[in-house]
Image 1: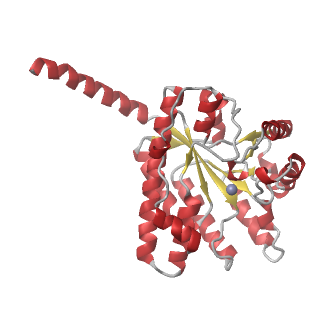
Image 2: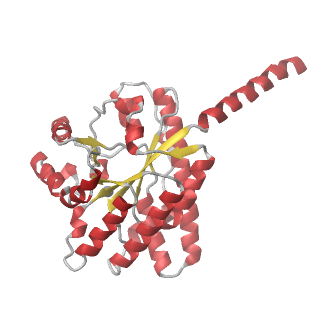
Image 3: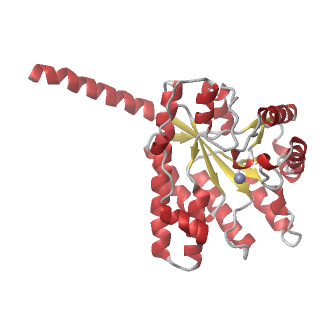
Length: 317
Ligand SMILES: [Zn+2]
């Protein structure tokens, strides 16, 4: 009995040691959407946006996380606040972050023609590119709103060509933590000074974020045979202003260090061409497994969803 157990123990020690080494090399790019800010209530936009921007940029600096922010320039059209809102974007540039294009008005490609969507892209890069001028040359990145990359093959390929011709790379993501759903209940709870509710939402949000990350780690191993660098997608909002520090600390305890999107994009997994067509906005891990025709059964029940009570707060307040 003793002889049979010993090799197993050695094997366990060996494999856990191996996993330790591997996981301490984890890398992640942080991508942040809907700049300058996602308000839950429109009042005091600039004040709340300044607070969120300052906190998020401070946290990114503390954790040495080079992030990219994707801008919707329609948010800059409020005539009385235009300068103040552009100043929020300038903070990102001054903090050495990249800015990317997320269309002018966060438009849904499923609902627009190819020409209409191309207009949205051109209109959406004017202020952003002028703010980023001192940083040239740099890689231009585009993120499709809702990650709707084209609901037909024709639309998808037309936009891929349009973007490539203009020097843009399409930005993928591998981890999506539904932050926008949690944020609505959270921002309202803070506004009503219901700190107990805010705390409950925060705990559920942190749990889901880590669960979604574990899911992405496992799925990337299934698709590529090893863990790949991850790309986190979050938004500039109140819940991240208050939770990002804890999220990044938890990632560091899992062995992650934060790298620029440029670096993640050079990984061989990210060279996989996404040929999948969907009207939904799934993770690139799903898209790549489809594009590679892999026989991977994705058990989506392992990918955590926000709890129903959080969804109810999002839908009905
Ligand atoms: Zn967005």
